[in-house]
Each structure stands twice: as structure tokens, then as C-alpha cells.
Length: 82
Image (tube, rainbow, N blue to C red; front, side, top):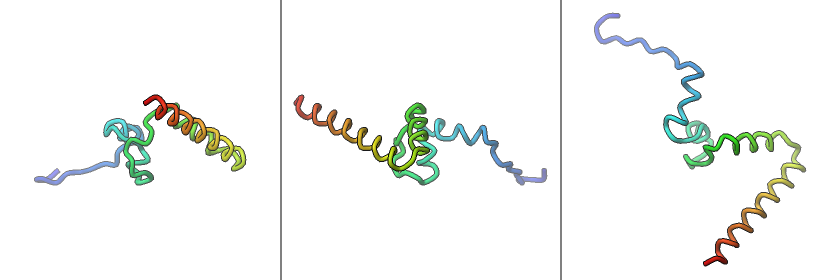
């Protein structure tokens, strides 16, 4: 290697997989898929979402509605507690 010339190599897949955790964010944020860097760092939640994404639209719609209803119920309960 002559002078200040540097040789850069492409990072391995193993290194790239560690980027989100090292930067305390998500892969979706790093890839520009989300503007929220804290979308979900929970690997169990991401696994569930990936399974949901594989389902047909009818089942997926039903499950999303159930989750939305649960979230609204919890929020209303929290508001009522004040």
C-alpha cells in the first residue's frame, strides 16, 4: 500500500446484521422504510409481524382489527384511570 491509499472491503453479512443494534435503531429505519427509529426493536414482535405478513388478506385484516381494538381498549382504560 503506497502513501495514504486505503483499501476498503465490503462488510460481511454478519457485520451488517449488527448495524441496527449497534446504532440502537431498526433495520427499517436504516433502510428508509420508517421515519421512526424506534418502531420495534423487539425481535419476538417482529417475528409475529413477519408471520402476519405471510397470511392471506382476509385473515390479516381480521387480526389487525383485533389488535387495533385491543390497543384502543387499553388507551381508553388508561384515560379513564386519570
